[in-house]
Image (cartoon, rainbow, N blue to C red):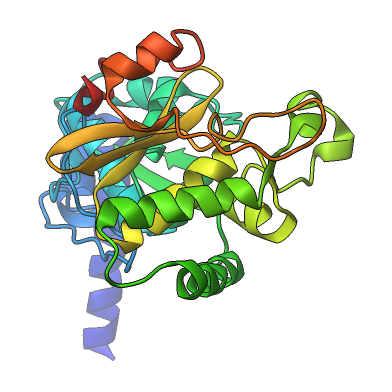
Length: 316
C-alpha cells in the first residue's frame, strides 16, 4: 500500500510540475512536447500502396524526412504522402521553419474546396490517378504537428470497375507484338471512337443538374461514354502506367492532358482535343495532339495549353 501511495504522490507531483512548466516556461514545454510526446527526432516511415510511383521530378521529389524545414521540403512531403496512397498521415514543422503554418494555410485554406489551388493541383497531377485526391483536410496544432487526410478521387469499387473494363479493352484490341507506342495509339483511338465530349456539362459546370456527374473521371468515361478532359487524361494515364511508361497529367488554367516519357523524350498527348465536338454529332478521330513535343503543342494552341513552365519542367 505504501508503494502504491508513493507512486501516486510522485505522479501527482509530476503532473503539477508539468503544468507549472507549461504556464511559466514555454521553451521547456516545447522541449518536452517535441522530444517526449511527439518526438520529432524519431524516424517516421510511410507505407506505400501498389499505385505509388515513387518518382522524383524537377519540381518535387520523394522524401523520407517528415520534418518540414523549408517550403520546398514541405512540398516534397505533401507529394510523398499523396504518391504513397495513404488516406491519413502526419508530419511535423521544424521549430526553425517559422513560416511553416503560414505556408500550409496558403496551400490548403480552411475552407479547402475541391482541387482549387494551383500548387496542390499540379502536385496531384504527378501521382497515379488512383492515389490522387478529391479533397484534402489538414489539422495543425501549436506544436508543429500536421495531420493530412486524403479524400481520394477513386474509391476501391471505382478502381475495381476501371481495371476490369481496361482488362476487357486490352484483351479486345491490344496484342503483345505491338510496340509501346502502337499500344498507346490503339488505346487512344479506341477511347476517342467510343467516347463523346460532355459539352452539356462543360457549358453548365455550376449547375445543380450536373453536380453528380462523373464525366470528369475515368469511371464516368468508361461507364457512360461521355467525358470532360479530366476523364480523358485519367484513363490515358491509368492505361499508360500499366505499360510501365512514366507519365503525368499536365494542366493549364481550365484544361488537363497527358505528358509521356517515351523513347527518351517527354511528349504531349491530348485525347480530348483529338476527339472534337461536331455539329452533326458524328465521331471524328484525330491524332493532331498525339505524342507531340512542346514546340508543336504551342504552335497548335497557345491558350488552352499554356501550362506552367516553372512547374512542368520536364515538358520544356
